[in-house]
Image (cartoon, rainbow, N blue to C red):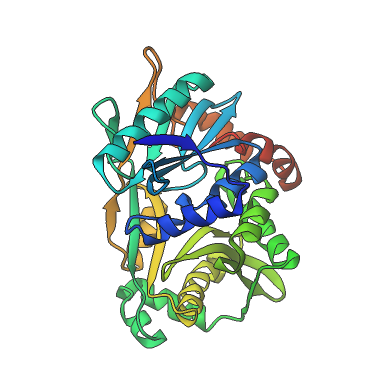
Length: 348
């Protein structure tokens, strides 16, 4: 079983990998070459896309890796960088082993003290398992609006009904205006949470490289964008990935309207499933997703670190970032948007 670094600049290579990921039952959007390329272009980090194959060139497994380097958070090799999934995708145990060994060897050559694999096949005994920190939230879409409302638990359903009666304009797009409105909303949201915003170029690159398999849905109130989400579409499932609302969104119930409208929009696109993404166990976002009727499922991640090194923890829940988060919340939005991308590009 041979392993090599794929040439993602070769259209034929990308097509072979895309076909493999599409055919694999555990494939995710984060395994696609488009994701690795968007992260490299948007955050300036280096992608190393490993492929395992037989002598005849047939693919037997893939592992997208991003080499993330940050003076604040250190250096790590992540799969998939800036994604919530990625991990080893393979057909057989030999390919899993070959990719895991190649991954660790690559990390040592690059001087990365640690590797994070987000999901995928178990890479082996040298890796630690983390299955308590994050939960995933996925459920089928209902066949129509009435059934979708009925599937939402009573208390949240009442909030959604009020949101549906609100004075909002709904827009879906992929152009510069849609991207600008989304970034305006998203950057304010993460500043309010005390975390740095990703570079605008990352969102633009995802829209560009995913084509019609990505779009932005924005909720406006009296012409002003108050809630917005950039979503991916993959194998009949919608992934609302970067979304949220401004400080005014909660009182207006704009986020409730946002996600119900996205369910409606995704259904019209032919989707049958809704992936509400991951949240940290025991947090407000996890509770919000449960209020919609999503049942949490633990996400399994794998780590391996060099002797004497510790598993990287760049989570905003880490107590050592508490003061920094409190200070960041007080920054003017223009300052947070200027400094944030420089910091966030290294998060991975």
